[in-house]
Length: 485
Image 1 (cartoon, rainbow, N blue to C red):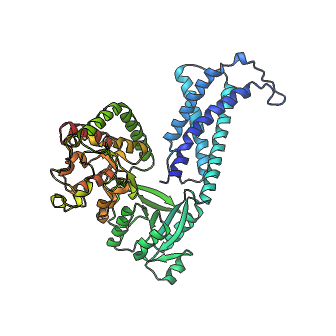
Image 2: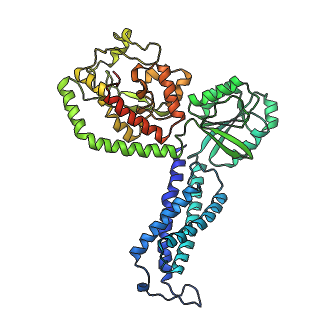
């Protein structure tokens, strides 16, 4: 999902909460006006009403109830594709549910609200405020989308009646910018089917994706071979593109499937990982919280390690620069480079030796990685830091700023990633981690294909519980002295 989509969808929660509090405040104030309906007097002195501070407490409870009700009925689902009118109708229906929940609340606590008129005013005003806020949100988002902010560039593969209907739907949806379509048919036949720009055939896929910066591919053709289907899927995984298809495509991997109706067709969205939408938000919040606490609690220990490194050998405390002074980068999510930090465990300016005089000692020549057994560059303290994984603690900062996650595939060097085979690039779908499924399953004793297989499994089957299990097992692996050399 695009960051703008997540921001807009998440903002609905605090805005709804605030609208309830504001609605109840205005309802309270409106009740004090005795002549708001001509010909009717509702005089009520302030001393007969609940104190405003106590009333605010009630409004906070009611706001929390509304958020829970809306969440339970899916009104906060991310990447919402419903029309504004459909969303407003849903809100009206669930506002009734919320009102019933308020009545149930007072029934349970065996109390009666001090003024039914105040409660009625507050509920009506709250409903109007929430509906108005959704309309304003929609207008702002559409205004940004018209400027290209938040739009997803989409490419269709196929040229048939399904393609035509889907194209018409995507063209009406401001969230998408329809680039065109690819087809194995000739130009004449394709033009007869679609009033849309043909960009080429399937063999032009890579060139078209790069030229137009395509972000999502929708496959409507069911006449491709099994090999072509597989190649399209692997291409999307390699280049981190969203992939959706119309059902009945045979022998296609179907984990993390979301079925979404578009133009009357059940369009299948093949998500590469559950770490999308709320999963992504949950993981970021947990990463931010744990890494922040870790940096705060461990700061005295980190300072001590820094002093010991300076006493043990010459050179900087952190390994953050290569021998030529350039930043020590690692490859992150979707091939994005980031500055990587860890405690220095080798002699200063000895990193490039792995590709020179020590190249013959690499015991993983069958993989993109370089691993030197009994590495002579490692210092005395460095060997201990590596064995206990203490050298990786500065990566908590990488997690805190959002370059890494606590759990994920191992971060690799750019020159190693350049040697990846096509299916290995799937590992770059998510942020790399300090620890991960491969790290607790053998660490450097694993072959690269085994490591890639375990990390791919993690990406496809992520869950909060799996993260928790990996974090706990990491502790026992480190305490058992099985960390990487």
